[in-house]
Amino acid sequence: MQEIKAYGAQDKDADLKEMTIKRRDMNPNDVKIEILYCGVCHSDIHAKNNDWGNAKYPIVPGHEIIGKVVQVGADVSKYDEGDLVGVGCMVDSCQECSACEEDLEQFCENGMTGTYNGKDRIGGAESDHTFGGYSTSITVQEDFVLKIPENIDTKAVAPLLCAGITTYSPLNHWNIKKGDKVGVVGLGGLGHMGIKFAAAMGAETYMITTSPDKAEDAKALGADGVILSKEEDQLNKHKGSFDFILNTVPVKHDINPYLNLLKRDATMCMVGAIEPLEPMHGGNVIMGRKRVSGSLIGGIKETQEMLDFCGEKNITCDVEMIRMDEINTAFQRVQDSDVKYRFVIDMQSLKN
Ligand code: NAP
Ligand code: ZN
Image 1 (cartoon, rainbow, N blue to C red):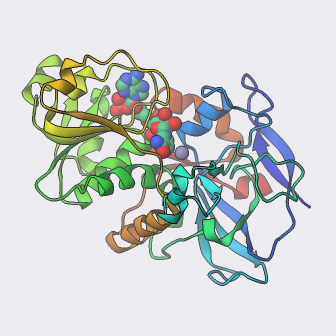
Image 2: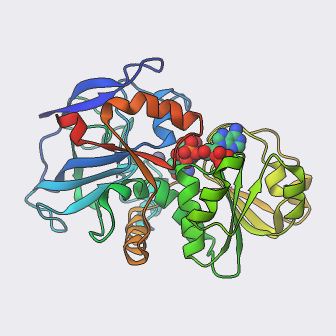
């Protein structure tokens, strides 16, 4: 086993601290990655705080991983030492159910393996509990490793592995195109990528935010307009006009005001709060045959497509770099909606 440095929490109330973890020795189809950067997703905070009730401690978060390949197993064909690669929210799935066969490993019927707080299928590590990217290296089978375009700023690519694919996939699935009016609710890590992707797909984009001071930034990110969701007159002005709304709000909230913004037959896709919401008024979907749906990250094939799309269109994330020992402050700032618009950890700060 390989002993490496990591940062994790021993229980829900503890700060994250430096710790040692053991990763499995290399299997023939494994790629060993020295981690350069890791993004800080709001899910890392939900997981550490046991908001979803499934936390198994210690938790080493991190599923927006960028690094260099430092070793490849004998059967690896897609990667060589020195390649710039990424790992997102999954490191394995059954690879034989109908979801996996359709390149939708995130919906694996036998359960995909989360990059952290997941149940490892492969074995050979100290426990069957997976540990994420707040660490110096990770060993992942090649099918769950992504190629990273080398022409875009490496530091600003890490959040594409979760925030990027989670917003790209629903926009792609609902076929967003020129002429569509798209709203993105919540200007955080996911929301800022939602705006960039919707704009890149040609849509007329609106940032729907609770924070008046983010309006200028929203426009700089590509929004054609901004709607302050606490101002009723602004909501009324756009009533019944949206083709699609992507809702990234991370906590329990009232979705009814957003449903009123949808056109007939239009969809609001939930990607944020995985918890009970405020009650939905049935009339808000019955009148106009509207839909509330949801989406979870994206499959490996679609994640690679998204990365290639970003390489072609030069799309990266707006990031604030931090050192590993600044993570607890960063967690608090994310919860205070005070991040522009994704923290990324420089993993060299854990090595030194
Ligand atoms: P984030 O950076 O904290 O951004 C969330 C934004 O939502 C905030 O900046 C804020 O934007 C808005 N917001 C916060 N509280 C709100 C409230 N009470 N009412 C209305 N708006 C509120 O979080 P993130 O990293 O983008 O993640 C967002 C959520 O998506 C998290 O719950 C995360 O776990 C989840 N997630 C899901 C998937 C998936 O596959 N479905 C993948 C990754 C993350 P404004 O200031 O603009 O209002
Ligand atoms: Zn995430």
